[in-house]
Picture 1 (cartoon, rainbow, N blue to C red):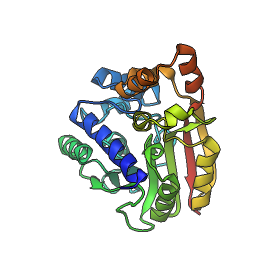
Picture 2: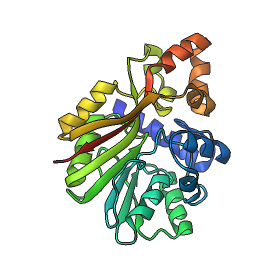
Picture 3: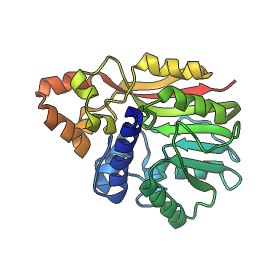
Picture 4: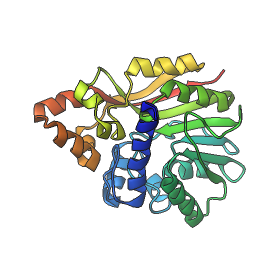
Length: 272
């Protein structure tokens, strides 16, 4: 088994625990009320939070990739790392019955939860496929918009993710992602922590490297639409973040210095 395989397995198990209701990852606050608070804090309106089936919002994101997306009726949308379906269901309302939303996730427990949410909400224009975002189960040039919310940072091969995204987009299509990046390298003890990787820290790329990987995949018109420090309380409010902090025994000052390196960004890029 390669290091990438071990990383992927750790991430999959972490998110399987979230789907089963026994764990938290990234910004997840576990409880439904915490998930709503986090969603509101990262850019979702009360109307959006209330428009999806119960259980679709797990508080796992780091932004709202649909906030500035130019979606229209009839569009085909692809969500990389769709989780329980939160962003898929919001997109489905905007593309209408003539459009379609495809969610791709590698975790069977998440897929089961998403499909049940689609059934409960009557979302006939949404489907969920099992697969890796480095090997998308989607045909070439078939998608109008790709979205992703705090997932690409978890991939052990981010350049390949962007190449796959570029492959599946139609000419003129766009990629809109919310993600975690770094303004400076993290300490070695964080980079060596599997818990920190599952918690969206150790796997994050430097900001310029992240944008460079997009450009190398072929994307143009790359724009950072929003960029801000990732809230320290989001890191420390979930079980994974607390486990990392407790394991490393950081002082409050050390924790704050590391947190300052973490950025939440929203990026748009285009194909052709």
